[in-house]
Length: 104
Image (cartoon, rainbow, N blue to C red; front, side, top):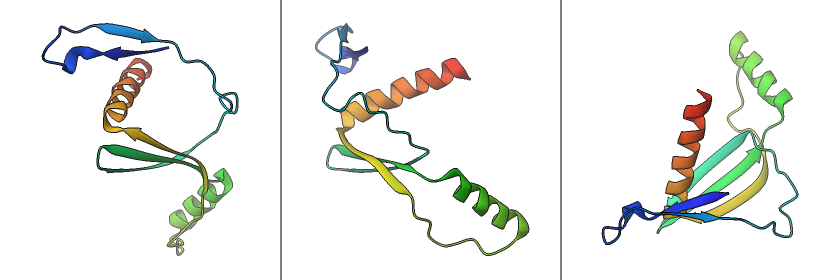
C-alpha cells in the first residue's frame, strides 16, 4: 500500500490518501536488479533496472585488485525500463529514504 500526501499544495492542509494497488497482468513476475541508471528530461524520470552477473563483478574486482587492465565497457542485461513523472520520482525518493533509515 502506498499513500499520497497533499502537503505540497499551498491551498490545502496536509492529508494522506491510502491507495491499494491491484495486480496487473505481469505483476506476479519479479525482476531482480543489481544495477540502475537514472536520467531525466521534461518532467519525466527514466529508470533502467539491469542485471550484471555476479561472476562478472567478481572478475572485474579481481582485475582491479591485481592492477590488470579493466574493460572500458561491460555488458549488462536490461531487466526493466520505467518512465515515471517527476512527482512520482520524488515520492519514490522519499519512500526509499524512509526505508533505508529504518534499516540503517
